[in-house]
Length: 86
Image 1 (cartoon, rainbow, N blue to C red):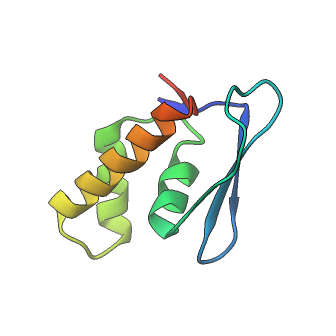
Image 2: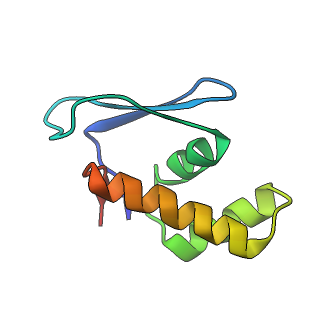
C-alpha cells in the first residue's frame, strides 16, 4: 500500500497535514500528530502494515502493541477518506 498521488503530506513540525489535490474524492484537511506524520512519510513508497509498525518501533520508544494499534487506527482513517492505494 502507499499514499495516493491525489494526496499531499506536509510535516509542520509537531503537526502533520494531509491535503487532497486534483481528483481526490475527499475534500478537507486532515491534521494529526507525529504518529500520523511518521506513517504518512513512510507511505510515500510501497509498504505493508507490518513494515510500518517495524519502522515506527525503531523510531520511537513505545510498546509494539501500542504502535500497532496506532498504525491500524491511522490506516483505517486513511482508508475511510480514500487516501490509500492498496
